[in-house]
Image (tube, rainbow, N blue to C red; front, side, top):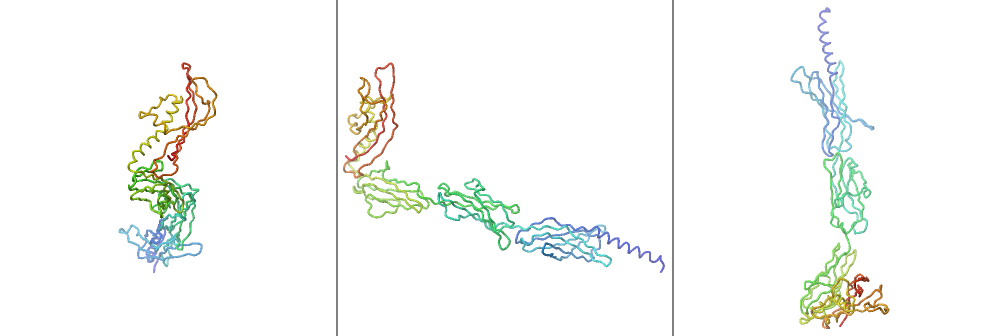
Length: 460
């Protein structure tokens, strides 16, 4: 065969070889550099390229990962779609699906395509896709590690379970204010499935004011879609801090209440404590233990009078208060009322007596009782304790200039028909001072004296 006959065949072969070389030069595999997968879900890594050769050519694709231990390969099919126009390349892709992704699947996945031929194989690789797995917590709770007791150190633990990766950010809030980092400690442990559990602890000393307030634990991580929050309403235990006795019959005044003989009486003893304190009534005419907040006497008798004690107690403390029950006859109510009025005005009566002695306070007009001062004076008998005074010139008082004076104001108790304590006392303090008024235009100088008074009800 002449050379002229071989020439067309050579040209065809050279053109075919040039086409294969052009196809190899123009194949570039494209992979996304990063992809994320939620733990327990499926995720697919993809690889694409354009191919100028014949789509009927045999192609082999695979994904592989390589770490320090071993190289894992995952063979896959290469799918190509012919271009509409013959002058455009075909679009090809290959993919690998990871089922039920877990932290152990994290790696860089590289794709590889190989097109074999007797004239020469084409083999290209991608740059790889980095797969990261994340898991959001399945449980976030706050619980105290021991009972919260007022004044004692306590610890709250915020437990966050089943998250990945580790090292989330933790913030605590107590009554709306951030908790100082110095009061917080964090510790993580890894679970069998590769996830982590966070134990964040907040140490503090609760107070009575912390009872029923809210404490919040907030946990976040850059790969989580939402922050995780847990809260707790604090249940702080404390002993009784207040106890108060009230009466439905009459107002409780200065620790006592008056009730008419034969009438009904209801006393209530209320205390603040957590847990709720138990109540016990003692004294008076109580013969058996009474453990209710309300003490009810349907028909009061004279022998019911006396001192009643309300005791409140829980495991963290005890408190008590007393009340004096005064039982009066019906026909003596007016007398008792009049006696009370005189007792209330006993301090004013002292002013009258001091005025009679020439010791009326400066700038105050003498006090007068329209009902008759002589009658009221019998309810206020001042007793002065002072050193003997030197004889003073006419117009001056007999008290030494800096001398302190004490006065006891005595007034009768209720009539004998009233059953009461032997003595009910109340002390009223007033500032003691000694003043003088100097007036060059006046011949007499008045000494002004303030005293300390002790009020004491004594049996008649």
